Amino acid sequence: MAEHRSQADSDPWGGLSSTHGGVARDARHDQLEPPDGLERIWAPWRFGYVAGGAPIQGCPFCVLPARDPGEDRASLILQRGDHAYVVLNAYPYNPGHVMVIPYAHVADLEDVSDDALGDVWTLARRAVVVLKQRLGCQGVNLGANLGSAAGAGIAPHLHIHVVPRWAGDTNFMSVVGAARVLPRALQEIYDELAPGFA
Ligand SMILES: [Zn+2]
Image (cartoon, rainbow, N blue to C red):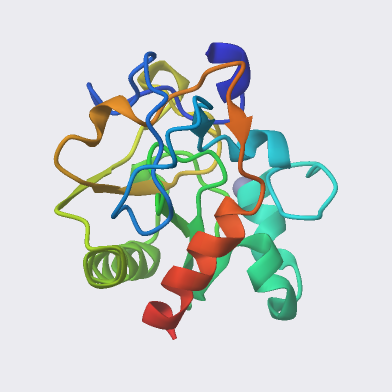
């Protein structure tokens, strides 16, 4: 599991990433995949961090918003604030897992500006609303892993996770080597969420 999560945070919240999953759902979470025996796992890390893009050199949380806003869909950026932005996590714990990230390349919470903090929380609130309204999630995990010792995958650039939750979802998000990949999944979920941020 760890090798597939090399760029993602390790499980910060107990129960979010079972290692025995295999029950996957479609983007709307209202039905199980056809019982064809395949384990359709949400495994977009094999798809690359950005759809159709080359591997990112440098800090992805700096590189993504530096791109032309016209590329936001490909970059999975859902909203740009003045000091922070919202991006769909390419390594999600659950479908619809987004991150709120200050533009500034800052590792420590104590170094984040007041303006950026304000933007982060305003955008996080928006994300919660959008996940409830457009994905019908029943709960949300919201938090940050500050520092690699706390499980941060990209520790040098602070980011806040906003993870939609559904009752009983703990056994479907997992990383299984033989799982079938759904390469379009990220773009589809992006299109589902984007109108909520417009
Ligand atoms: Zn950065």
